[in-house]
Amino acid sequence: MTARARVGVLISGRGSNLQSLIDACAAGDFPAEIVYVVSNVPDVEGLRRAERARIPSRTIAHGGFASRECFDEAVAGALREFDVAVVCLAGFMRVLSAGFVETWRGRLINIHPSLLPAFKGVNVHRRVLESGVRISGCTAHFVVHELDSGPIIAQAAVPVLPQDNEEVLAERVLSAEHKLYPLALRLLSEDRVRLEGDRAIFDIPTDGESSLFSPPLR
Ligand code: GRF
Image (cartoon, rainbow, N blue to C red; front, side, top):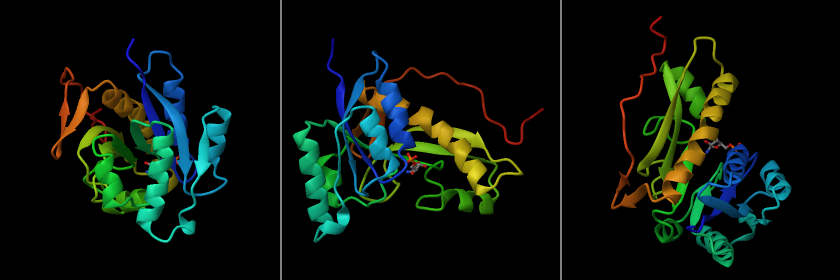
């Protein structure tokens, strides 16, 4: 049996994506295990999720550090302590320094609540609704220094409905995130996707699955 990839998850809040990874890892045949959770914000729901799953966790509050690099070095040290091989950002609201991103290149992934490269940054769902697009979704991607710009591992699309408000759309996208992020972690852990230069390279059989129409064709 090959060893499961040792995963560290970085969070800042609610941690529902962390929970989806915890749940996926609970399956015996999942190729990864979460060995450590770090939050840069104290006392958040995500830390309680880690505790309930008996995963070691720690708060490293960024406010206590003189610079971004010092904070990142503390996080990197903690990840090394737990022999982490793959890092998942899950609602981690801090920009990581170039050094950190370079060290973890190809082993550092993020989930973003839009179909990148559209709608990078924050307040995504508000901007999606303002734009009038009829399809939105989420993206799991490798992290590079430029925000929300790394090579894409996987995406899921959801319809934007006429009656949607930010909350309703966020909820629909979040449900898709909870399926997509475990898939991306699985692909990476099984070496079915890897970062080569600035491209994601896949070893996955493909077929032409059905399209999402929004509004629907019927
Ligand atoms: C998610 O929408 C994720 O895409 C974005 O931040 C949010 C985090 O939610 N990066 P949660 O903390 O995982 O519940």
